[in-house]
Image 1 (tube, rainbow, N blue to C red):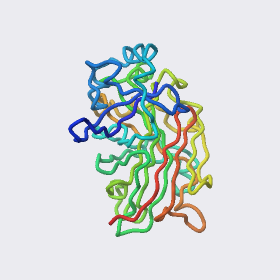
Image 2 (cartoon, rainbow, N blue to C red):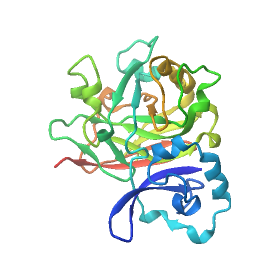
Image 3 (cartoon, helix red, strand yellow):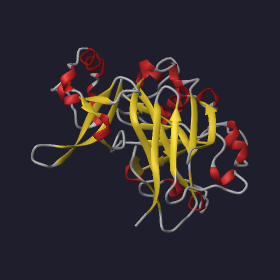
Image 4 (tube, helix red, strand yellow):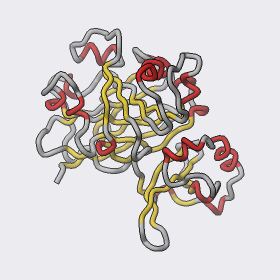
Length: 295
């Protein structure tokens, strides 16, 4: 089951956030959640995940009437979780990326945070800001928390995962290196592509391991790796984070990018106005964003 957030125009011509469902990445039609299970939170992904009713929704989807379908081509996607409580990112979580950046294989991940205003939806423009031309691509697996938890163990951690998605942790490399902390280069408005949908954990290998992950810039493969190459896997990352903080429904964990990023190439390759960047993860789908200069 695939859940996504989109912008809906109601009968009074006002726009609201809604949740849609597709059965597979190949589908061209979707079901509005409100048409399947009217009494669940259908306008906010965080509230939906907190309700704990994904199994009920999956059951309703299996019986959904065909006349409730709508064309996916007409949808304006929103970032999958538009206002997460937390967006926590792992840096240097593939050995090849550590090597190309001149880092030793870390004993502990480099954690940093993103904010909600840095995110953009599938199909929307990633904005290159006026102050920099060094906008880099980063293909990453996103983990979406579905159940509250603290002090998780490897045996329990994955029970708290609702599903997985694609993320482009696009970074302004010059700003990232202005300080010893990476946060400033990772939080420019409208730079983090997120989507297109949440694929529920039951549809993927345990911990989303063994999935091919790619970034493509204007059709050219830039990064090509596999999630089995994580230094810290999904369960391990959740254990480490939950030592520090309570993980809550709707929280998003971004698991790091493999080698092949633009700044490490000779010559460097950065995203520019008119480019298109795609992030594809096996079993999940393709996140696609055009690049545009900010006004």
